[in-house]
Image (tube, rainbow, N blue to C red; front, side, top):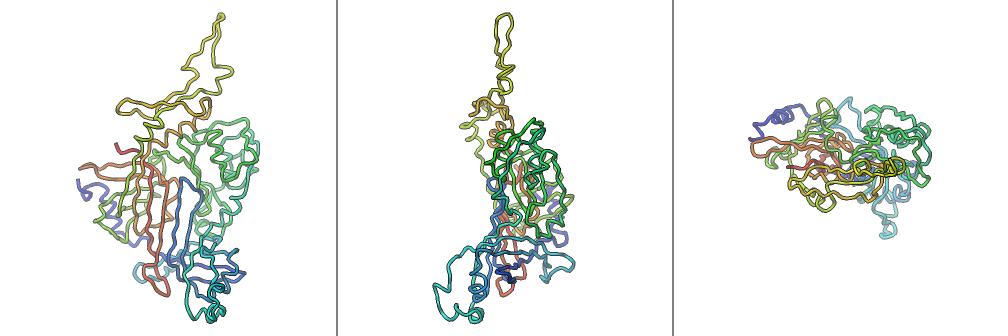
Length: 460
């Protein structure tokens, strides 16, 4: 069945025939150096790498064009303490003018200069030694790394305490926002989308957390003094268990997201999902309209190259598709039964043993946990969950990066012969690259191209 004959074709037509979606934006930046504000209108490119699996914040690089004299004399000397405010302004698709009544998205950063060489030292000419002469002579292309100010002091903060009558979810929900006092209560304040778009915040303003699989209330949860705040989710997952499919956490636009890393079955249970239709590269390539948002669901047309990787067979054959371990809570009091001077130990009462799924050839590889004796079931099942998933890389042209959030559930549609199939999973990485549509003295529009990496269930 051709894609034009499938039921998702109506979604594609709705995108193509809809009004102009918000894919046309213009970036500009204010740079604060030594108390003086410099407006930078020429943004050549903006690159954001969001690795939701291996990192906890954005890696952002911006390339701009600055008057040479201004840069040498008023920015470079204060390169160790630069503050940047980045604006993303929506513009019309035809006239490319700012849309009245629509406020720009704002984010504040600490700016770190990538090129550290001094032109005044290496050149030494009149042009470089005089600001006015330099501004008239040339402009410079410079790259800055932008570090989210909402990360603030979190990178250096440590956390410690004995949290009594608490659940792991309560601690994460409060401590990861910086509220150590209310960790046992699980108090968390909702944050509006307007608050996020306004920017200006210098700390975590909200928590978006998927409910943990581990709901046990512990008499005491102990966090030793050497634990960094941004290592707390990993510590709790390792020592007590949070999710049964690994723990992920990521700070994006002031919101700390905490989510199961490899839970591939969340799409049907969430209201904020991503649906992707895989289109042939020759069909609708370069289209201006590539997505729509309806009822909090994002529908995207993948019009570029799609790459799949499937290491599941290798992982299961070498690392195992099953696990076994002794239950620690039964070792002392319930490990055996004694009657009439005879002690019996039953394997079924003390040993946990299961497989993630039955292999087609029946050759199940059930291995002992490296810990052998444990009560942390979430940690053990997480090791199996990572061996069940394959990856898909898709290209999303004319994209809107603000629609993708960490650990976002996804459904990927494709055709197997005449049958429409889909795979479900989560977004584990997003690489967004925005560049000026036309070079010039002033950038009137930037186009964004995104590569999304999906972790999905295996295509059988």
